[in-house]
Amino acid sequence: MACLRDPEHGCAWDRKQTLSSLTRHTLEEVYEVIDAVEQGDSVKICDELGDLLFQVVFYARIAEESGSFDLGDVADAILRKLLHRHPHIFPDGSLTSFGQPTELSADDVERNWELIKNAERENAARGSEPVSVLDDVASALPAIERAGKLQKRASSVGFDWQETSQVLSCLQTEIAELQEALANSDSQAQEHELGDVLFTCVNLARHLKADPETALRRANQRFERRFRHLETSAREAGSSVAESTAETLEHYWQAAKRSENQKY
Image (cartoon, rainbow, N blue to C red; front, side, top):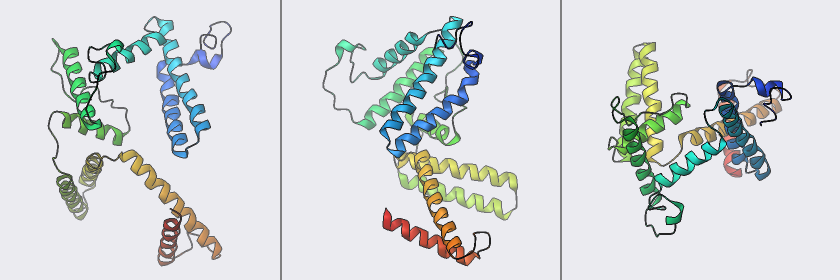
């Protein structure tokens, strides 16, 4: 990376990059890792993880050039964070204290993790403006991911539904409010209520211990498979989707679902 960024002999593209310009490439690499994992292709996973690691090295090199930090500082920061946030594994916050028995479940660990992070935020803000448990939830996160993080943070201090049935009831209420907005032809209210429905769906996913992003990606994949099947059915009938009636398309769609259920 130092060679690629070398002012005299380096690559013009690499020299041109900044911390800000890299962000879109980093996001792309993250999604490519996820895609490789979902495909179950170990060779591709390895390749994509290399691309993602390159992004980390790239950021660190740019920062090192300005004297901010280097790759060693990045590794040290995450080391200290992991030691501090796993007191059940490293009781005194050091690697040498590893090896003590622990009976904490994964849920217990997750709850403790949030409590420790809350304490870290309060310590960091001591003497300055009042701290919020919602501080540092990145605004640039995809909306579904950010909704889940906001809800998890609120839950860590006791603001949460106790039962999944309560979330379902809330969802039904939000859908009723959306229907009312639709009946009133109020576009602004429709967007508002639709947002509440989506936010509550994320909350429901959290209570079901399901990742909403994964659930939606898989729904996308199902839709794509079924729609491609529908297109094939229309072509085989000497027609197209655009030329088919609604009834015919529904027939093709149900056939696609039955075919998929047989395979999966």
